Image (cartoon, rainbow, N blue to C red; front, side):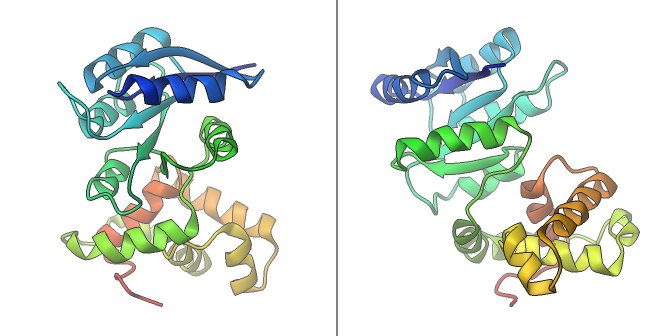
Length: 220
């Protein structure tokens, strides 16, 4: 089945470029283009795409509010991939907190955009570990700490360890190497963590780990 995509960006040339890239793939279908956040929300509800490519700065309604409305809507919830010009955009961290499943730079190669759409459509999160680390370093210190939720107590010692490594921006392969276990074991742990904590993906897990103080900015 084709991955259905809505492109939300206030620049027509950007939308045209993304449509040309994605439209060349036989298993990706661009079903709509939105010029602002309000249109993005409307198209997400009407067209029920699998993925919404979301710019942050747009008129009428910005990408942050549009993302919140899309991921909390009553209907089928598409996943949101944030597109940004700068890897340390001041709004990116808030976008992830709003429910986006990941983000990528607008100037990334075309093949990375195609891969990103497939990854997000499969229900996985997309944040390059190196970008995650820079993001955390820049923004996690701004988050006010809250008491650890009771759900964290349901995690085993190993699961807590894995969650801390996920929050540090390590990939499954890197975590496996760190803990001397198989990568499939790490995937199992991550799946259990998400289920126990009621999280959609590892992006939400990273946000939760820092917001609860389980991991501190700059921790090794």
